[in-house]
Image (cartoon, rainbow, N blue to C red; front, side, top):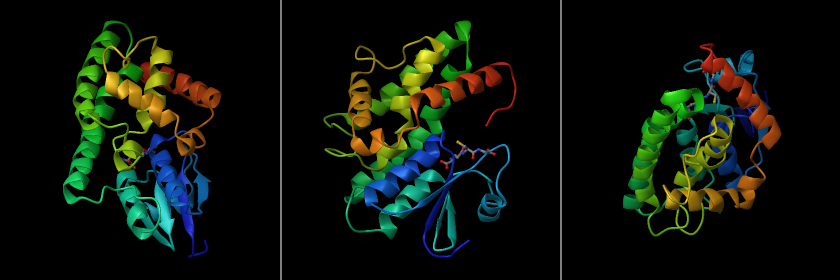
Length: 226
Ligand SMILES: N[C@@H](CCC(=O)N[C@@H](CS)C(=O)NCC(=O)O)C(=O)O
């Protein structure tokens, strides 16, 4: 491949590659999107990310980077002008990283069982997810977005929640986030989904729901699914 420019290896359905897309778009960076088939990964992807073999991978001027949260920080620093993604204040930056870690370490793990469970297990999973998400609301107190008046790093990292939790609720027939249980997060879901760059970057709803309906069934029947 040409060594100059920006290539993003991702998949249309991945919330992790969406993070990188949002960061690149906010910065106004032109990039080429390589839509990977995770059942049959390209040689290029394996070449650039032989360690985890996962997407997303950002290749900037021939140099590859993996891990979406790392890539988002890199994008903010590599294109320092224009939109600010990371908080500038060291304390706020450290706090944003703390909550990003909380989302990766706790929220993803707490919400996933809602996606895969049924029956009594599902009710238990909903309660546990709500408890974990309640803790995250602390980071939204007094603010419209995690980043303040506009979306920033933590909004991008948490960006899977508004559309994937809403989708999971619909597929599983449960409510996880509403104005009664998690008012701050519920309001943030609406505000985040109303941001232009988000609206224009989300995958088509019908395609996403069909893909996840099938994936959920596979996981529920104990099969492996990416
Ligand atoms: N922590 C990683 C997660 C990336 C990830 O899980 N990617 C999935 C797709 S959503 C993947 O590449 N799966 C293929 C595999 O595991 O072989 C990040 O944030 O970049």
